[in-house]
Amino acid sequence: MAAQDIQSRILIVEDEEAISTLVKYNLEQEGFTVYVADDGEEGLLLLKEKKPDVMVLDWMLPGMSGIEVCRQIRRGQETRNIPVIMLSARGEEDDRIRGLDCGADDYITKPFSPAELIARVRAVLRRIRPALADKTLEFLDVKLDASSHHVTRKGKDVHLGPTEFRLLLYLMEHPGRVFSREQLLDSVWGHDIYVELRTVDVHIRRLRKALEVDEGLPDLIRTVRSAGYALEKPEAA
Ligand code: CA
Image (cartoon, rainbow, N blue to C red):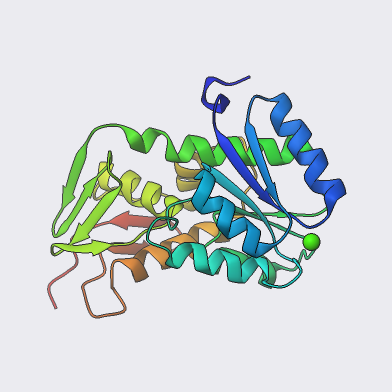
């Protein structure tokens, strides 16, 4: 049992009782506290009430879909930083990207083993916990407070999901250095879990959007062709 698991609280939103019972049992064996909801509405209620550390969310739910639940979580002031792992019977690459685009941090295709889910949950927890260290970083007009998870650009709040936060934190710790997608996966996601390289691109895209690159602010992340990404001062226009 890893020390970080103790008292970590996991919310499972899954309508298939056989799956939620199995997952709950296995997570509890590992020392996690587990809550279960069998539809999206109940999931959102439990999320506010129990404030879990990680949410495991099924895509196909009666009523509100997992994708819609995930969108609502990311829109909510109090809930937007909660890591979400999506479960899906779909294995198509487009679905994976859609799942990640709606704000999920990870995506697991059914059928999966409890051990695989536990590994993913732990990886997500590792990603969010180091960020609790007490430190503040600055890069040009971006300020990041690691203890409060507060990020601003030009003094305006920047709203980031947990993975984008870790990614930005990592880049801000090493400004100017070019990282390959593999290096970013190892450092930000953890090297013992399998995540596709394209996942890095999805999160970089989300990070750029959150930093309002779409709204005309200079892009601080340079894409280095066939090499990776770097946090750099943009060239003067
Ligand atoms: Ca389902």
